[in-house]
Amino acid sequence: ARATGCFDPRSVAIEVEPLGKPVLRGGPRFNLSLGGEVVLFGFSLTHPVGVDVEPAASGAAWREVAARLHPIERAGVHAAQDPAGLFLRIWTRKEAVAKAVGFGLSVDPGLWAVSACHPGVVVPPSGTGGAADWSIFDLAPAGGHVAAAAVQGNAVPRCWTFEP
Image (cartoon, rainbow, N blue to C red; front, side, top):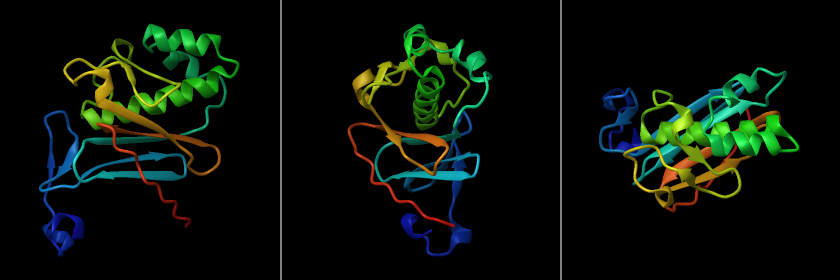
């Protein structure tokens, strides 16, 4: 409430964009993700932001989802020494961008690609600007989880951890 200028939380206006992304009227931009026992929030005063947190992969279920990645990403996962770990890093980066853009998983994840090696998008989602328009950062949440944040532009996130 304080960030929007409304000091009464009941007066905060949450609206929904056409594809379902919630937004605060008057800002800031925000996003959240729940993965396992970790909740991750992302806030930006000026740019679209997306976050994703996932429990570390176990078993082989990740292979089904990896088959739906962009060919560049699939090749990287296939050649990796730790394919499950690389898949999860790519997936959290990809989902953070998709949530920042506002389309979530409504667009085929095989049509665009993120880099696993540096902050950025390799093949941008259609209609979202160029690859250089996005910065992606790996985050280190609680043990046993992988997370990423994506922001439009070149902003560098500041991170805080709060223990229960």
